[in-house]
Image 1 (cartoon, one colour):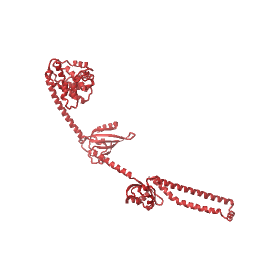
Image 2: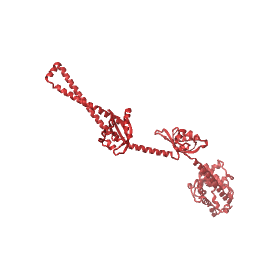
Image 3: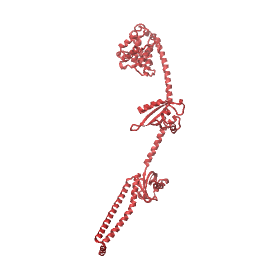
Image 4: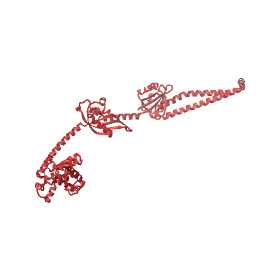
Length: 539
């Protein structure tokens, strides 16, 4: 816009300075040509007089020179006239090209001497209505009308002026204007006026949006921060400042320089964060102990950090952005819950022990059987690489896998003779009975289903549902092997103990048909290579 004003000013100056001079030149040339014509028509007496004084050859040469000189001067004057007309057309093109911006030319008394048609669209005035009136008519307030004098002052210093003012339309409404002006010869001013209502509204909307964003950031429930690539703090919100004991973000930034050395209680933990960011580019819920600057060492608190690296299109690291959340209360709650779970686990274990003792009291010949099965099952699961949580569940199931026998008559459980078909079917029901006894207890593991399946076999020959292969859960397959080994190697009311070698031979023969081959191989390795033994005293 400033370049356009400069071009316009130069064109107007050229128009004003050349036009009077061109008129004088044309008048002078007309007079010279008239004199020359009269000279050509001199009487013969004058002609002969001149010829008598000047040699004819020289006289003719002078006449030819004068004619050619006057002809050339006439052509040059015509060319300059053409150039002046071209500049005038250029001025008209410039004026039309800056639409819809309004253009005004004012004299030193602020009277408008020229304006383009755009003033009608912008101000509602016809161009003819503005001619001869002062520019005060177009300003919306007293302060804006004083801008005309300020324009002259700045033009004197800088040669151009760029500013803003309130404009007034014909209907009395106002609008924000951007003014670009240049000085004309003779003290006049050319003004280029642009309605910037849309831009001002956009700026106001952006300001409101920024204020809302700032309010959201500062009122967030978590601390928000931005650091440089080397960890120096660039921005923090009010929540983060308060989290570390400061009243305002500016106070925090003045006293805390970097994330790692100033805030991390454990610098090794900060190195872990840096390594993860270098590899992954972002880290979520990274827990660390943070310290408040100036507070005692025991004033540290636990926080969760989520941080991401911000890079430019070329991949260069620019900043880190992230949030910090105080999780001290959550960790305290988790610790309280953990202690409650420990107490519940111990209480549950005590209840189960009572139930186990009740079963063993009815069948003293198998006393300790469930504990030994649980120990072997746990060892097999651990050697197979099962998760710790599943191992704990398997151990619990092993301890109570024969719980259903509490519903079987003691006379049947302790009889030294071979059981009848009816009696044996009654004993086989203990798996279903044990499942039904604890199915409504909300264990963190599927204990009831393990109990129900521990007599199932791979080939479908087991009970109570005749499941096959992968339909049997892996914990139940482990219990099946552990139960068989302990039962065969131990004393029973109807027979003496058959020994460990017999038990291992039995599961080897049933490998892949009755028992899971991986479980069998692991069990054999425990006894043959790792020296596992049944502990008949401790659980």
